Length: 267
Length: 246
Image (tube, helix red, strand yellow):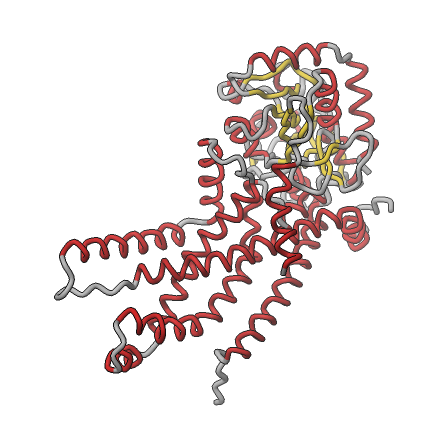
C-alpha cells in the first residue's frame, strides 16, 4: 500500500516538478506524437528524441529536430507535450503550451485564432491508395472521381478532399492511424496526405502506395497550404519574431536532410 | 527486432509490444490508477451525496427555514446526479479540463490530475444511484424497529440502515470499478496517457493501427477478467452473493 501511494504521489507531482531545475526560460512545445514523420512516439531515446512531458516515452521526428534546434538557438529549455490534434489549439490558448510544432498547415481559418510563423517545411499533397487499387495509375484528380476518400478531422487534407470531382467524402477520422487502417481494410479507397507523411506510411505498410500529380492536374492549393508552420498565441509576437529568425537561418538542404533522416529513423 | 512485413499480423503485434512495452505498461498503470482512485473517491463522495439526497424532512416538527434548507440540499444532490449521469464522460472531460485550464488558477492542473478528478466526480454520480438502491432495499421494518428501541432517526440511519445499504451495494460498486477500467479510455481525449492512449502511441511510428488495438483489447480483457474475479471473491467474503437454488 505504501509503495502504491508513493508511486501515485510521484506520478501526480513528478510531472510538475520535473521542469523546475533549469534556470533558463522554457519553451513548451505541443505536438501529437502520432503524425510520422513529423512527430511520433518511441520508448528508446536517441540523439534526436526528447522526453515527452508527464510520460515515460520520447518524441522523435522532424518537428522534434526543429524544436530542438530552435530551443538551442534561443538558449531555452525545451519541454515537449503530446496532445491530441483537436486539443492542440485549446492547449495553446490556455497556456498549457507555448507553441505548436506539429506539421500544422497555416490555413486562413486557423489564422483567425492563432498566429503562424514562416513556413518550416514545404511539400506537396498526394493520394495514398492500396497497391491493388484501381486508382494506382491515376494521374489527375478527375481519375479519382467517385472514389471513397477519407481524411483527418479538422485538417487541410479534409478540405482538399472536396476538390476531387464527384468524391464520396467519408466522415473524417481522428488520426492518421485510423485513416491508414480505413484504406488498408478497403473502407476507403484513398486519402490525401502530405508527401513525407505518405512516404512514411508506405515505408511501414508495404501494401500501400501513393499517387503524385502534375501541378495542373492536382489540388489547387496556395503556398501556405502545402507548407507547415509553427503556431503561436496571438499575444506572443516577440517569440514569433525570434523563432522566425531561427527558421530563416535553416537552409532548404538542411530541412530536406532532417526530413530524410526522420523517415529513415522510423523503422 | 526488425519491423515485420505487412502480412505478418501476429509478428507485428509481438513487435509492437516489445518495442513499446514500457509505454504500454505505464498506460496500464495510469488506467488502473484512474479506476482505483475514481472508484474509491467516488464511493466516499457518494456516501455524503446519497445521504444528502435521502435526507429526512419532518414536515410537522421542523421549522420552515430548516425545511427549505434541507429541500435545497436534496434538489442540488439530485441535480448533480442528473447532470453527471446524463452527459457522456468524454464531454465532461473536455469541458472540465479546458474550462479550468482557461481559468489558469491551479499550477498542478494537468491531464492526469484532471482525469483523476473527472473520473471521480463522474463515478460519484453512478455510485450514488447504486447506494440509493441499496438503501431502498433495506426493509422499512429495520428503521421502525430501531426507532421503537429508542434510537433517533439519525442514529438509526447511521448504525442500522447505512451498514446494510453499503453491504447491498457492494456488487454494484465492484461493477463500477470494472466499468471504470474500460471507460477511462475516453480520457485520452484530453491526452491522459492511459492504456488506450499508450497503445495509440505504439502505432504512431508505423501506422500499424489494428495490430496495436489488438494489444489494447488483450490487456483490457486481462485486467477486467481479473478484477471481475476479485469482485466476485469479495462478494462471497462479505456474503452478498446469495445463491438461489432452483
